[in-house]
Length: 213
Ligand SMILES: Nc1ncnc2c1ncn2[C@@H]1O[C@H](COP(=O)(O)OP(=O)(O)OP(=O)(O)O)[C@@H](O)[C@H]1O
Ligand SMILES: O=C(O)c1ccc[n+]([C@@H]2O[C@H](COP(=O)([O-])O)[C@@H](O)[C@H]2O)c1
Image (cartoon, rainbow, N blue to C red; front, side, top):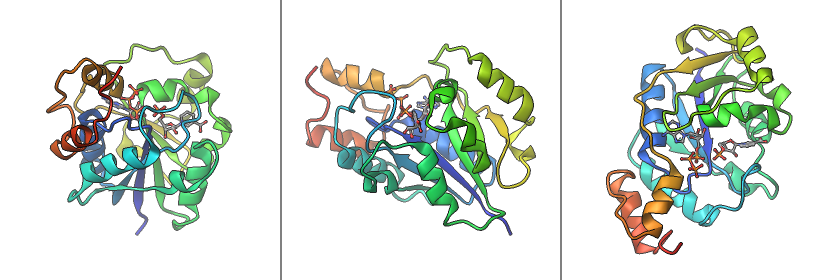
């Protein structure tokens, strides 16, 4: 039977429960076989992250430890160039059967930036796109994206057909949490407990991350 694999890429600087709760709900609600969290090494469209790729990877590892449906994939750390998602999708595709569904999962803010991505017009040749609501992001989709949605969207993630080529919107528990907010709290000596998993909370304090502005 065809598999359904999700990929949630991110800078994860740091990973937080907005990412994790969304990932788990997508994986459970839409019968994914596995959802991969993929930390980038060199984010293509933003400045350098505050902590190293290895530390961001380690925090994601701690966050998904013991959760069967979620795992971490370090392939972007093994490439020495900008972490373009098209390259990640192609390398994941090469490991799957041709009927398997590959779901690229994006929050609304990331989705709105899609037309500026490297080779963006090829993405749907390799995956479906699942869009997460993002209550803390009040952004309007550009026209190119609205046209794409009009042409390619289906009513519900369960309606996705075939291995690639369609877009669906997900209505997961809305959590208005961002890594920016967490970095700001830490830089002003406030506590981020309950915004990140306990293991990540401990890692951040053990390594003194984000604590100077
Ligand atoms: N609270 C959230 N709810 C739903 N999706 C989210 C949430 N936070 C992040 N995402 C999505 O997860 C992916 C990775 O996000 P990223 O690692 O940049 O986190 P972030 O919180 O947006 O970080 P920053 O504040 O540094 O921009 C993106 O597709 C983003 O839209
Ligand atoms: O491929 C691109 O051109 C591209 C441009 C911007 C972002 N991305 C990816 O989109 C994901 C979310 O990005 P970010 O900046 O919100 O963490 C992450 O995996 C990035 O590497 C990819």
